[in-house]
Amino acid sequence: MASVPSLASTVQQRLAEGLSAALPEAGSADPLLRRSDRADFQANGILALAKRLKGNPRELATKVVESIPANDVLKEIEVSGPGFLNITVSDAAIVETLAARAADARLGVPLNEAAGTTVIDYAQPNVAKEMHVGHLRSAVIGAAMVEILEFTGETVVRRHHIGDWGTQFGMLIQYLIEHPHELDHKAEGAEVSGEEAMSNLNRLYKASRALFDADEEFKTRARARVVDLQAGDEETLALWQRFVDESKIYFYSVFDKLDMDIRDPDVVGESGYNDMLLETCRILEESGVAVRSEGALCVFFDDVKGPDGNPVPLIVQKSDGGFGYAATDLSAIRDRVGNLKASTLLYVVDARQSLHFKMVFETARRAGWLNDEVKAVQLAFGTVLGKDGKPFKTREGETVRLVDLLDEAIDRASAVVREKAQDLTEQEIAERGAQVGIGAVKYADLSTSAARDYKFDLDQMVSLNGDTSVYLQYAYARIQSILRKAGDAKPVAHPELELAPSERALGLHLDGFGEAVEETAAEYAPHKLAAYLYQVASLYTTFYSECPVLKADTPAQVENRLFLCDLTARTLQQGMALLGIRTPERL
Ligand code: ARG
Image 1 (cartoon, protein in one colour):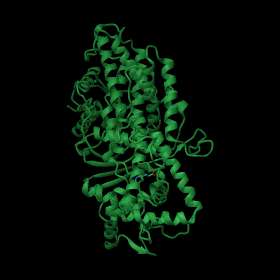
Image 2 (tube, helix red, strand yellow; image 1 turned 180 degrees about the horizontal axis):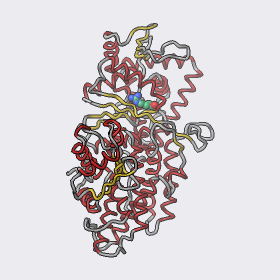
Image 3 (cartoon, protein in one colour; image 1 turned 180 degrees about the vertical axis):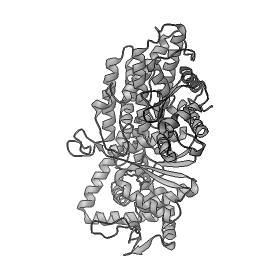
Image 4 (cartoon, protein in one colour; image 1 turned 30 degrees about the vertical axis):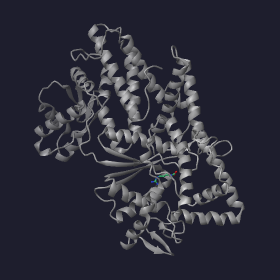
């Protein structure tokens, strides 16, 4: 494992050295380097510096250039415009840096020296309820953040805060007691599919709801059952567990379809914090963070007010003694900070819950559970919209079942694969269809900034052109096919060769992989990695159309271009893996 400094960081450092040599009075000024169309990089930092030192920017820039010793990285530095520096690096430096990346299994990406422990709260469906597109977003974005942060060296603890507690269980359990065979499986010990499990639960949910609404006496029995559940009555708990188990069969079948690895010990639902709730309330009340108001235990905030101008509190314990969502989340924070030793808590949850988390985090700060050493962040995501731009619903106005969507994506993708397939068997088409279809759904979600709403448009998602995973997967597969056809010619870096413009552009971009990962991790912004990878594929497409690979002029050039192809493929594969998307070898 050897981390490789990017050319951008090397150039940045050389410039910074030049700056302080030429202008000691400037201190450690930032040269403000960025990629540029005119040269490889442009530095604008001297403009602000000149203003500060009251000097002529062009003169200062010239002085800086003169104080940078000749070296093999910087080929040309030119002062331009009012005092910019245009910097061109040498072809050899590009190829050598890329060769160092290729020699490393991590592509030279450094580990974060300040890594800590992040608990990620994601993929949190609700027991006895169908999963919908909101659960899809949390799962997809959360899983990508797990991979990305782990890749940077962070210790990641996954937590699936499933909705497995609440008053609705009184109704469900009571119904099951009165209709004891409703959750029985056809044959004892038979495997139940996720579909069947969900349809059992759905049927039960609807039937018990109908009874609850129609029958006052059942309602009373159901409410008494909630009390039994909360009191830990054994029979009641055993029945509750059956609902949880049945739901997990369904959840896991969906996560499996999503090609997502969800582990049972990481599923710690709302019920997992039951033992802590009373103590959480006691601590908050004794410290004065929470106060009793009309019987309920509440936390107030200056800036959270209802439409009537009255403060809206966070209710930690209701006046009837019951606990809600806030008490669970506050207890989960105590567990994650105190027991799991987290330095960061990341919540991948719908933006519509932002007020809840704002109040929960503020309460935890007042209680001292969050502080300068431990921070909490909501990675809030927007709503999934239908093609019409309205929240995604079926024609009947019902929530779209996630499974149906995924199946449709797989069908569409299989059709695309079949159309392009030359030598694939039926089984291979099915396998690739799933990888392409699921990849398309994930990529569409990950490639727009999470906070924004996005349209669920399958036609666009599985399109071969444009910013889609299919485009990236085809770029990867095309490279694999070239590498297979290369026969004896192997990817070998040749720093002595001159590079074509499209080779330089691709090479410099590949060199920026580590920075793309770092930025993505630091900002919890998977869309930045997606944009980076799309750019890799686009630059590769240009390179491929401008530079013959296997028919290049000399054997050395063939090898060098194969080397660029191979590193492109590896970068795509690693980057896509971080997003949870497969890169099939053939498509
Ligand atoms: N189960 C919730 C829902 O479906 C999401 C849970 C989010 N996580 C949390 N710690 N509150 O909306």
